[in-house]
Length: 114
Length: 113
Image (cartoon, rainbow over all chains, first blue to last red; front, side):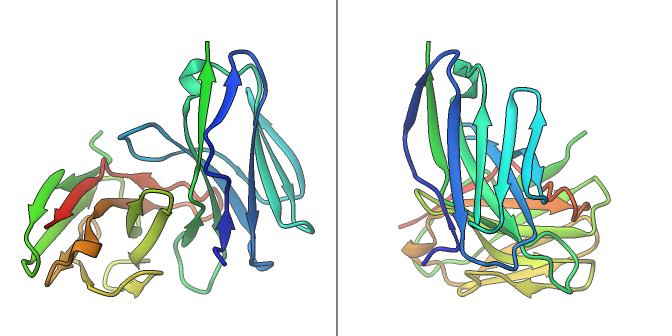
């Protein structure tokens, strides 16, 4: 069983709609959760992080975390064609070693149609 | 700001050949990482270095070796390339464990024939 699961998509939404991206993880020791965006042929970039249950909002983006259900989601409001990309969910298990050992999901491809 | 620089960006190898991917960061980060990305598999950690002088295995270390040459540079070596190592390789660095922000290089596309 993969440790971080995402639907590969593509998820297609019309411009202006809300895009909802979901992610589940298997390790209950996971402490912090991240969403990275990756445009085709480019490297990933961080857009949100969350480590407390509940919602965290940043502009058009909202991350939601439910540790009891081992579920994290990303909502994108007022979706724009420029949001079309692959969204990678990542999970960090803090260990005694320094550094961010992130485990990534396979990514969900989002397509926003004008 | 250069950020994280990887070389080469593209490479074609024959099975059994060796090569080294170079990575350098100019952000004074302690931690550096090598990931590989295959279609539908997301990013998988090969090796990481939490600080200068230390390296540790990640999820998929077999067939690879690394060297943390100094704080800036972290190289990945394939001693005897195999077709299964055809992938896009990303080097990354980070400083802040709380935010989990990894800064990635542009990637190196490796094809092993």
